[in-house]
Length: 493
Image (cartoon, rainbow, N blue to C red; front, side, top):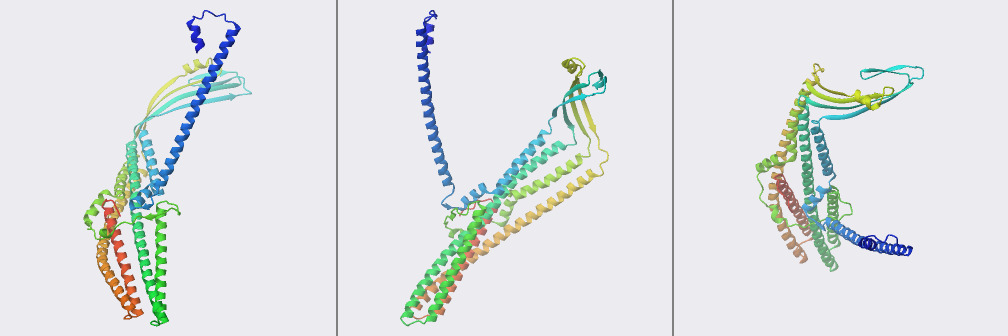
């Protein structure tokens, strides 16, 4: 660049440079090229280092996001959100939505004309005939060549003008199917939410049951240690100590049973959430005492809201609407149809002059209208219409049956919630009395005023009362949650 600017400054007058000047200019230009390449390489290295650093930071961010994607403790909403994203059923239904949208696009495109290009190339060989004739369009061509070559070309278009409403109804049908597919996604998400809520409450119940088992085992161990001390002092016999040992063994067995049930529910929840078996699933510890005795919503209000909002009911209503379209499509097959067509065609063959001249001479434009009137189709149209009407009756009966089952479900949840609230109040009071009785009996046993049988009986009563209280508590919570769920409210624990 310096050399070129120097030449321009001097007006390129000194064109007869010596060989030394030429060599010097060449060396100088080579040095400039080398310096330029070094600069470019530096920029490339800097850019590569920056890119490597950015990718490393992105990888760290991705790892951090992945690690934060699974919380240490799962709330109910965490479980529901995760399951909705990972559920294979939901993903499959979403694929069905995309498929329905493609079908809808195809149905709308049927309103547009169909255009196609066609070409036929033919090579003929007649070894024993000196002269032969061929028909090309409206001309008869004679040739003595044994080998002949011909070609035809055409662009044709067709468009439906009237088809009895089939295109319009197919579009409406595809739109309904798309809406039904979208509602199926919502229904599958709600179904997962319901199943997860039930499993979540079951896990909370069994977790508290295991905690109560630990308390009973601790109490039993204290009593056993005390009994062994009394036996050593000669105040109890071996049979009494053995009875307490047996009671403690039963308490430990009950804990193992409750832990096994707890792990079973955790496994079901993991499977529903599409989590690996080794994934940690520690649930949050919510405060639920105040929720047990919460005011219940009206059955009729919950049912009315569910009728308007439940996606499966909306899908069944759309299914009924679809039967009307099916009936109209069946009737359309018995109506006349009108189709317009247009085409441009030409051809050529060897032995008949210039190819382009032939294509020009054989050029043919055409336009036409086709009318088709069905007369007799063996009663297929009549049967198709009757079949569509029967499907509408079936869809109506299915919708009525679903509505009745919905009312039964809501009414059952409401009755179960109310009954278990009352059971919880009574069971909690009974448990408090049993605990107080057990504490008094335990103290009297320590003073020698009660025997082993009375102590064991009070402990059994306490265990039974605790179990009844826990069952009533979590059954009430579950049914209350389901009422809020069908009422369109968020379930929070």
